[in-house]
Length: 304
Image (cartoon, rainbow, N blue to C red; front, side, top):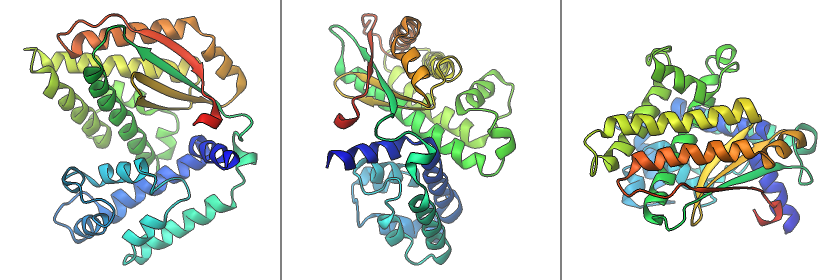
């Protein structure tokens, strides 16, 4: 059982297999369902999805939100596509694509293309606040988590159409260029939309106590992007996600032991993370939170 859990975690964070998985989801969402709520494919998705979740928030949410839900409850994961096959049972082309990707993942030997259960290099960055406000912190963590997840999906979706350009960039870099006016929003509409949605989610809360919610939301997004961009360039982080477990935690993955050890022992990363979240907290709420205490710990795979 422990071996199975370890292999599942390894697959989930294997950059190559995860990329194949994300490419499939992006293609299904954008190519076979679409975003027109009145289209037959969109209505069909919602009707089929109702068999797995009838929560109003999910029924009124986007297809991407529905996919997040399926992954969260364990009905959908890398190589686990039974639910997708049932949802797309009437779409032969979509089924063919799902089968193709399933076969590719089945053929791939994880031990030859990425980290195995003995060498998955992951750490978690814990951001704790003394006498903090858990409700406030969890709300913020949720917004930032959605932001990162949507950026990853947008990146894998876009790279299918423009591999040459996007293989040289990262999602955080693209967003920074859009915010700086270097890249036009029309060129990267999906990234621009995610930026707009994230700022709107932040403004919705910040506006209760601040007359300049627009400025504060931009500062928070930029601070967050800057931190993750530095993680990518300075510490060679390959994958990341934000979560909440009584405190904000950022899980990050590395390709090799050297980068992993550098991050684990880095005092500068702790300082950068502390400074970033102190700034973010100060713009998110009028309750002045203490500067966070940051811990960087190795992820024990068997506990994942």
